[in-house]
Image (spheres, rainbow, N blue to C red):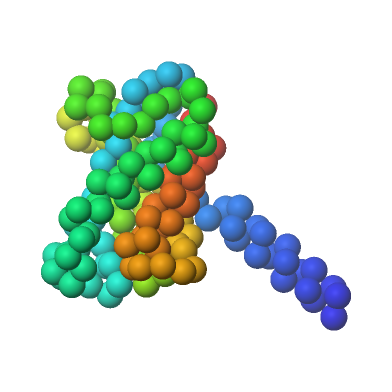
Length: 164
């Protein structure tokens, strides 16, 4: 029985350690201290089983709280990245990280992909499997904000992991 539990534990750790995958390109273009624009794309997202438009009609404060969700992602990603590079809403940055949200669960957990784009919008790299764990207690938007913080950490870890 102990061997079975040990095998399951090791398998789960291996899965969580390899959740993010660089499936296309590389992050060589990102250098120490670069300023990189971060944008979050909800156009393909399923939020609580709805698309973003439906969710914003259902949850009236979504458009009010969305900038705060963005700030949480940025703050936690930058915290993970340290001084390697800085993510923000830099309009003149030569590189953009586009966080494509695939889904946000009822608990606020995010599943995303991250794309590295050049100044012309050409895709240079793709990281799949960016995930953030949502909250356990609170309103729908508070759970989403908890998920945004966790997503920012995972995004920062993934970028750091795949940068040379």
